[in-house]
Length: 280
Image 1 (cartoon, rainbow, N blue to C red):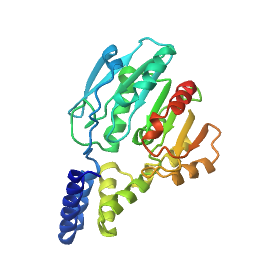
Image 2: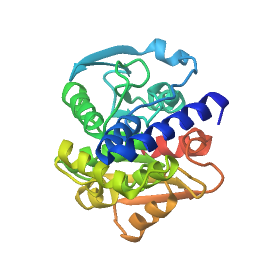
Image 3: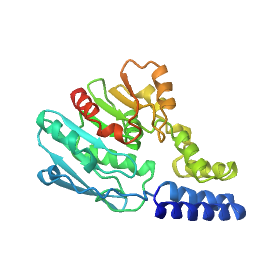
């Protein structure tokens, strides 16, 4: 962690600790704002393939969202859903290979990410984004996801009438929201009183408790064929959660477990890129 990041973390911890002393509810509200804020943006230059794509945009809940489309009309239509603090430009290797196969590819940056406007992203907003993309540019034959994008697509598919003809690739998906919250609260050293208020806030905003937002739960209502990649050394979306889904023995989900790739290197690995594209 760089010095600037360390100073920011120290400041936020002190702020939340002070708020918690006076009001657990206010501390929870501030923690929720932090939880939904992507503090890091990729400085990577936009790959050349993006200059060859058709630029797309639409507005949603006051946000202007930007994306690209390649190779329209293609034999199949693939949608890419990136993770938190990521963007569509990180998937150029996949895009190039999918185009070579004759597929149409669509990739949008979520609110607060990439070129899209905003400075925060909630689960409901990302889910609404995927629904809007599907409405405007669908139907979609396959989904390519990483991290947070995997959770969102699983929840989207749960509410979509579909069958085994749909395919989805989940790379290091954020399997359980409860696990994400546990890691977040541990990192910021927040107590159970703040967490209770935090979870109540989620319920008030969405009508559901955090455990509702779970790939394991949603998988019972998903018929799509899924290829799931996860790494033993993933410290952001622990393999333990993925293995519980594996133990459920869904006939439509295949798992590939790796070691040494962690949470981010895994979706850049050449072998995984190729296997994911071949599956789609």
